[in-house]
Structures are given as C-alpha cells and as structure tokens.
Image (cartoon, rainbow, N blue to C red; front, side, top):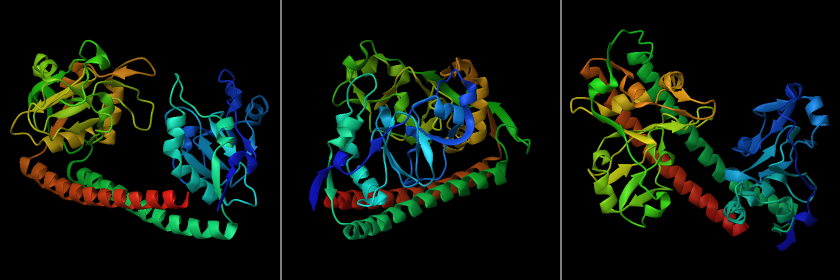
Amino acid sequence: MMKIKLGNLFEIGSGGTPAKSHSEYYNGNISWIKTGDLKKQYLFDSEDCITEAGLNNSSAKIYDKDTVLIAMYGATIGATSILKMSACTNQACAAFKKNEKVIPEYLYYFFRSKKAKFVRAGVGGAQPNISIGYLKEVPFEFISVEQQRVVIEILNRVNRIIDLRKEQLKQLDNLIKSRFVEMFGDPVTNPMEWDVKRLKELSNKIMSGNTPKGGNQVYVEEGITFFRSQNVWKNKLDLDNIAYIDEETHKKMKKSSLKNKDILMTKTGRINTENSSLGRAALYLGKDDCANINGHVYLIRLKKDIFNEFVLFILTTNEYREYIRKVCVGGIDKRQINKEHLEEFPIILPPMELQSEFVFLLHQVNKLKSETQKAIDNTQMLLDSLMQKYF
C-alpha cells in the first residue's frame, strides 16, 4: 500500500446553482444533486431537476454514472454517494470522476472512513466547509484494483447486514402504524367516530420552558439535563448535544421541571424539511425533577388515567403532522405552535381496553426495535473498525 494525494489520482470538479429568479431553469429533466441527496451508497434519482437552459446558464455540469460525490459545505460535510445515473450537482458537492485506477466503491468507503476528519477540517465560519483544494491534498491509501475488490466485498457484506436491519426497523414501524389504523382509523378525521377530547381536558399541565438569561453561558458540564428543540425528535430524545444547567437555575424554573412520562413537543421550527423540526414529540422516561426544558419545547403532563404512549403515538402520526402544519402560525420558513392551539388539539378516546391492547403491542414492537437498533449499532462499529483497518 502506498499513499497518493487524491489530486494526483482524480479529476475533481464541482457544480453550480441556476439563478432562482429564473423559473424556466427548474423542473426540467436533468437530475440536479444537492448535498442533502447524499444519504445512501448509490444515487439512482434526485429530488430536484433543472432544464437545459439552467445547465447552460450556470456553472453546473453533467457528471457520468459512477462519479463519486462528497459534500463540502454545512452540516452535511463528508456525506458521500456514487452516481448510478448521469447528473449535475450544485457547488456544495465535489465530484470525483471515475478512472481505471480506483473502483468507485473503494473511494466511497475511503470517504466514509474519513468523515470525522472532514468535519473537523470544516469547522469554523458561518458556513463550515472544506474545499476542492483541501480534498486534492488528502492522502489516499492506494492499492491494486484486485486488492480493492477484496476490500469492497468485505465492506459491502457488512453494509448489507446494516441495510437489512434498517429495513427491519422500517417494517416494524409499518406494522404498528397499520395496526393503529386497523384498530382506530385516522386520528384526525376520526372515521370510527370515537369520543374526542381536547388535549387540555386530558392534561394537568401544558407549558413551555424558559431559556435562562445568558444563553450558553449558564450551561454547565454536569447537572440538570436541559432539553432543547434539537434534542426532541419523533418518539426519541437525542442526548448527543444535550445541555446541562445547575441546581439554582433549575429551582428558578421549577414550574417546567419534568416528571416521568411527560410528553415533550417542539414549539417552533421549520415545516418544509424531511425531519420537520416543528411538532416533534417524545416521552421523557427519566426521574422526576431531574430535567428541564427551554422556551422552544412544550411539556404535556397528562392525567393519571390516560395512556401517555397512546396520546404520544397519535401526536406523532403522519395525519397529525399535517394537522399541526395547518394550525401553526408564522412565516413560510419558520412556524410556531401557540399554547392555545396545543390545548385545543383533538385526541380520540377509544375504549380503555382497546387503548391498553394497542399500548401492549407498542411496547412489544419497541422492544424488538431496541434490539434491532443495538444490532445495527454493533454492526456499524464493526464496519467502522474495518474501514479504519483498510484506510
């Protein structure tokens, strides 16, 4: 094995964005890739397309099948995919044209192994980024094509296991969704005509938290867990970027101190994204009075005779997501759920025995999902260690 700079092995290009003011440049038949499209190993289509006029009147250029793309800007730095069609890109994607010395999949796995390095290199500025100049200087583990094939086969096998288990997670989600519809129907239009109550009638408390004066300056290394909107996802509380506040600050905010099984919901955010940041909801399963929330998160504390998991499931259905989009207020890009709207959320109330039956099934499915996710995490660790070994 020898190390060669990427710039000495590849012709590297980038793309461009046609002027947004010209509507005739868009909705054509030429695939136009953005960094947000770089989610899977292979790209067979694109979310957006441009026209011949858009291509000819911008710095966008068409790249052939088997070109390897890597994101250079923003939160997606290091994301990578292999084109399985001809397409052009915006300026945030670097394109490594195929050559006879390197198999596309080998370069793809090399980029995946270096993602953390690329993220560190891109830190800083309003729009963190790496450049084509930077990528040209990156040392590349160059081996023969025959050896590359061996490495690719091993990594592909592990990657396929991860993909299969991710598909299992999707199927488990589909199972519980279909069972809910079978038992209860659409929770918004209520075709089965269940009793309906407003969320405030089912709750002891509905309120948002506060953002302490001083912002990030009041956060501490250890202390009371402090949930912000970026920590609240659909049926999941993400602790990767969690903040902490001290006991004194927590006491000043005792009204929003969390209790076990409180429902947390994001109050503000965008609605025009895949993981819309508005109206995401999850269950707090920690100890009483050991966590708090900021001003962009609501806590919903249900009465004791209510199934928290059942109400949470309703709030996270696709049907309810669309309902939230209709009642929220604000501009095109950023919206807000007012407390008055939240209190008026309609919640169907089938017989308790049916709710209990569904919640039992939900617990069983969640156990299987947890086991599957652990298997994915362990297999991902294996893949990461193998990539470190080879690269």
